[in-house]
Amino acid sequence: MKGKEEDISIKVNIAGVAFPMRVQPSEEELIRKAESLIGERLKALKEGYQVTDRHTLLSMLTIQLAGDLVQQQELSNTETLSQQFQELNKLLDAALNEI
Image (cartoon, rainbow, N blue to C red; front, side):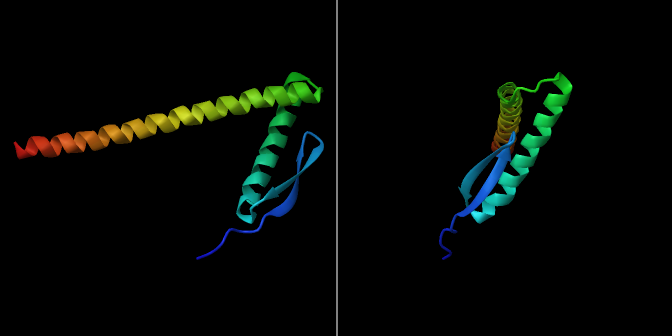
């Protein structure tokens, strides 16, 4: 059985500030993608709204990302509910076929 991976140290740059982190090696790619997404979104906000204050940009980004998360959760809940209805429909069909 494979044991837990050893954490590695990385630095993540968000809005010009480097944050040291300890992550599992398997998580590093995900963290790097998140770092890149944050950078891209901050740049788009800065250009789109002519905002330069770092705190304002980070607040705006937080709202955007929270909205994205809520949307994904609602989509996931809808898909789960749809799957449950499909399973229930199969059970009902099977029960009706036995009558």
